[in-house]
Image (cartoon, rainbow, N blue to C red):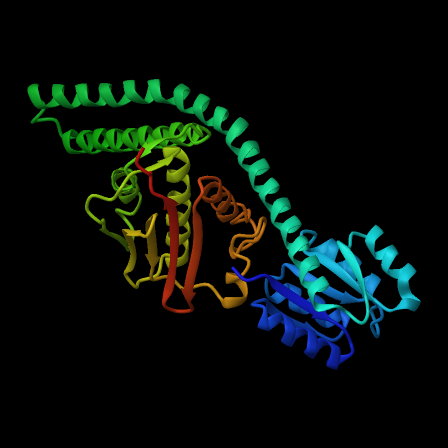
Length: 368
């Protein structure tokens, strides 16, 4: 992935020259010529490193820096300063700037500082992801397991007793009872809802086990098949279908089965949310394949798609495309952290109105 850089300076010639030099070195460059414009760009697209001039019209560099760190604290900022504003640049360091450079800027020095700033941003994001995994999968997982076990036993007894009553009705002489059909309907409802409760408790127990990071040999096709069997039940009453295309004899991977399952489940849930509950038939396609030394899982939906401006930040911690109260912005960030921890990679492609495809690449187990 290219490093995304925002150049902020009111001197357009300087911005254009730096943009040209950085673009030639494979950076993804955006421009802004004031503090207000810089904040607008940051809200619209994902940026890794900001190159910020100290002297700006209106909102100056320090005021802009404060706003950047308040709104998007993980973005790194490198201050640009002339000799007369050296003390201001030092003040910027105290406010959270990564470093500063004195004009005129040496391109090699600038590139080195951008790379270091990007590395620190990536490390901070990884720490947040791992902290969130531990925080969420610890106490919540224990609570889920406790609730599931407490509910599971009485629900199992309830379902068994309902089945026994049903057997008595079939064996006994209840044909003349005017309430027979109503009794059968009530029993069927008890059994159906009981089975639903059992399914919920199984999901809670599965969730609790997702904190298990032990690594095993995993046949990815089998893992997905098991996941889909359970997941299809959730979609029975909806308008969404699932199609699979598994590459035969896919080589195994070394991974935590529960963590891989968590990644795939999160992507599936996002696909269902993207498709929504409209009248148009929804479709999720899951494909496995080998690409060089990777086992690749492609998950495609025909939902509404993700705008380009949001696509760039989709794996950022706390970023969500869902309405307020519907998402934490941690699901895909945690998935990204898990996949990276396993030595893999995750990427996304999307077109508005056509749908989205996530690509999960995991290293194939190498022979001894």
